[in-house]
Image (cartoon, rainbow over all chains, first blue to last red; front, side, top):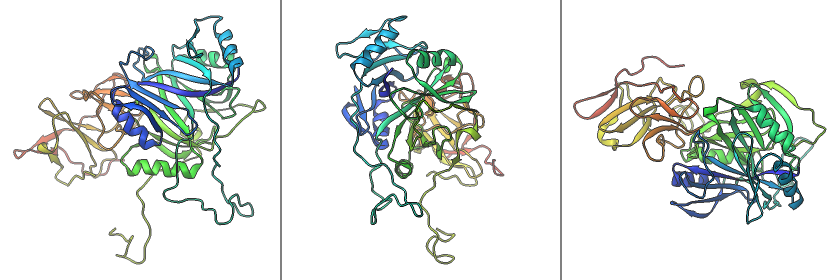
Length: 317
Length: 123
């Protein structure tokens, strides 16, 4: 099954202008936006989010829990891949072929799904380069950081769902759609990677009671840890509120920084995730603070040590 | 940033519009105190969503504690809604749990105070 991962996530929210403000600060590009109808918020490669009002009649029905996530649009590599998804899922559920060529159906938990030939545009942007002793990665005179350097979300990375039936969720994505399990946090759930994407995960499931079913967070990839630190610091300086991070996860090795949002889920900056192939042997660790991160830091306002007592940066500043 | 003095003074009633919420850093407390004015009443709550043990702060931006319709306090990590008057979670991951109330005192000049300003330092 040649699935790449989420192209678009579609939300029905409570406060459209607040989402516009938040997602603009987060660094997504707004198109077709009005405060009444909402709009589309895109990363550099054209993946992104669609924000509509909760009661917008164009949205698929909401889960009973009221989760704001209304539809995942998963990109596949080509028309053959789309046909393969249609053939597989049509065995036991209704799969609609829409006028735009995309497929619409539901997973076994009732999450609404669409599939389409991906519209993401590959980027020709360098990743972050790190100079190590005897192993410089940047050319002479190339700077590692500037205060105003871009730190934009490059592509939609992954989403995490609260699901009441982990076995059912894994069964659907692994056995029906061909996702690989890369690692598992015991007590929470598995990380999943679709076959046409080397990223450690595009989906992660957390076991919860039924009344919690819905989206837990979503994340976009940035170009590296420096971009992530800059993007998050810019959010903090504007009064947005961190939920968790910055830090670096163990499973996936991705740098993370989560922010609370008016989408009613956390929205994460992510950078430098591991990639895998089918030779990878999945790991398992108990869910908890130790397994969740290699380290965890907390942001503070800029500060510098100064000259002597009473001078700039001294105790009184 | 709103700062609180030893007397537990938070702000004046006039500084808080009907239907508005604000968060206050209180020396000695590890999380803010949320003050909400609604329907003629003023309510104080700890800025600690009961979803996770120990609680986590709830706003998505400084002082952004309310849902879009401004009918409920909301935790913007996972979308929990709490009744402003009772603190009870009516939707979301901590359904049935409640926020921790912070007793407030109104003085005769319209000042809003903590009824019991913290003496020590909360861990």
